Image (cartoon, rainbow, N blue to C red):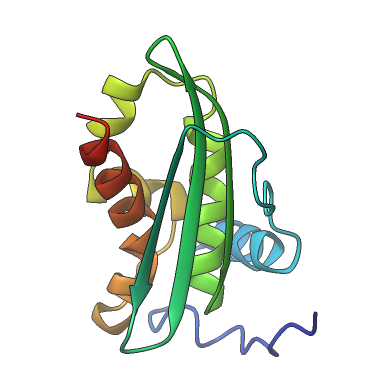
Length: 140
């Protein structure tokens, strides 16, 4: 699979601190080398969300045992922000109680990304949270 070329200046529109530059590089790394990108076998939960405006597409797979997320993976395509966000989120929610995952908020995702996200990119950044929330809602 060929990855789209990333314009490093397109990820955020405002000047970054040195620490934020490190987060930006982390986003690019998660995009180029995503964690947990595979179709999880024996999943207990699966949900797909699409951002029709920009074409981001994420399917999240979870394995939940006794109210705890034991495994998480995803399949998808899209911009660097959406794909890095879901890659990071799958790492974050492993071994997390489902009740805690249900309470994750926009601020948690933005903190995880660590850089200012422009209004235009906000839906990209939060698609991972949307797919997780919809999936958790379906388990209720």
